[in-house]
Amino acid sequence: MKFKLSIIFLFLFLVHSLYGNGTESFSIDILTYNQSANIKDGYAVASINGGNAPFKYFWDIASVDTLTNQANELIEGVTYNVTITDATNKSVSATFKIEAQTANEHINTIFYKTVDFTSSILLMDVFAALNLYDPVIYDEFNNPLLNPNGSKKKMSIPFIVVWLIFGAIFFTIKMRFINFRGFKHAIQLILGKYDNPKDEGQISHFQALSTALSATVGLGNIAGVAIAISLGGPGAVFWLIIAGILGMASKFMEATLGVKYRQIDKNGEVSGGPMYYLQYAFGKTGFGKKTGKVIAIFFAILTVGGSFGGGNMFQANQTFAQFKFMFPELSHYGVLAGCILAVLVGIVIIGGINSIAKVTSKIVPLMAIIYVGAALFIISLNLDKTLFVFNEIIDGAFNAPALKGGFVGVLIMGFRRAAFSNEAGVGSAAIAHSAVKTKEPVSEGIVALLEPFIDTVVICTITAMLLLFTGYYTPELTEGLQGTEITSKAFTSVISWFNIVLLISIFLFAYSTLISWSYYGQKAFNFLFGNYSMKMFGSTKVSTNIYNTIFLLFIIVGTSSGLGAVIDFSDMMILTMALPNITGMILLSPIVKKELTIYFQKLKNNKIIKYK
Image 1 (spheres, helix red, strand yellow):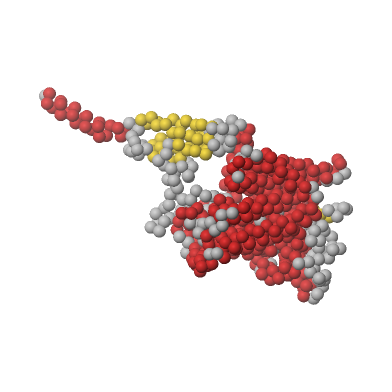
Image 2 (cartoon, rainbow, N blue to C red; image 1 turned 90 degrees about the vertical axis):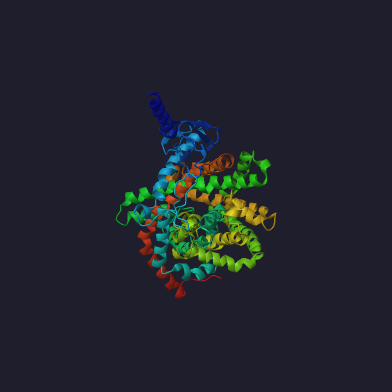
């Protein structure tokens, strides 16, 4: 009997030893830490009670590895989740958040949540939602690629990018490929051959082009292209160029409508842009005047918000960041740097569009010569790689590897970068072009089509070629680098002091963007509050000065603080501008097409007078 009992107890012991631990329950505690008053520096540590090692941690943050129990760089005030599994595949989940403590952190939380909601609409992948394609990225063996946190890597076809592409293709066809047939005449116009000094307006064709270009040719041409190629490969360059060419038609539409529906006051000051032609587009085409007014106000609000963020704080912040990167001893002088930059910007914008146009017409050619010249010099030292680079571009465009998202993934990456860089379809440039001296709206539209060509087809492509010829697009050379750092490494790979050239280029790009976007924001601000200023003070100068003061203060904020979701929110505002703008331009496209036909007939019959 004792022997049998011993056998039974031994058996139970063995069963418990082998399987008992598998039924052991476990729980987790999440310890959260807010390190400082700075944003996005929180972290969380998962502490496990019970369970069977080894454990896997599935954080809802793609960059956090499944083998680590700690997540860093968390945004304060945002709710996160982690699921942990043990050796027996038992799992337990927990939600947590880093409590926001400072005003800066609370503000960032609000903007983050707003961005999250806005991006869910603007960047929504309609095609994936309708199951028209599989967004998961696979390797050459048809296995899904995984993020560090174990989730599947996916590509996306953002709705707003599709909308911008659709608009560009629609206008290209509707205007009978004005992108190509208007190019030669555009050159003649900016050379001043058709400039009549007696025409209404404030600035020349060349000055209008320079002002609009200075707003679009910015840090996106340096940092954005590097990111596009590192993610999409060389093939993204091909589609970036195609997108730039198509975007020329969208710019033509914006500028033409900006001049056609502009308003000129008794002092000769011009106000124009989408705020004015959208009122007509929606008010006169069956939607009603109130609808047109509401949409115009909505657009103006977006423009003001965009001017403070992407057109201001981001430019100031990234410029100072490059200075700190090269001169670490300056890292504690953010406020001083902001004050100096604010003074430099204030000196120009206080003089209005005439002052802005005079400065940008000198800065734009200068910064293009410096940046493009330096890049071409580096490329010229690597000409033996020409055939290899062009093969990489063409092959990558049509036979992209699976890990880059295949053909669709590379196409979208190229189009997305072009759309975000040249802003064709957003409508902002129409504000600058509306101030031109001309009686022919179409003439300024033809000048404007050069913008995407210069911004994307020339400058973005030169940046891309620089990276490809120097090899700074491969994972081996770009690991741990971001944006401007990649381009900076490409510059210094040949001549060590060329990072000084890049620093000068970054400053000029950012400075010119600041002064141009200040004008865009000022005109939108006056559209919203100018009438009140006029009634109370008899002039719009008060509302103009209020806006300029706020704009200059935001420069100091940009250089002296972390921006976080505020900038993401501003970028979303700029992208949102494309929704009403492209819709309005489609509604008005029959009018523009008619004017374009009449203009070319006048040109053919020598009724458009040459002055040079």
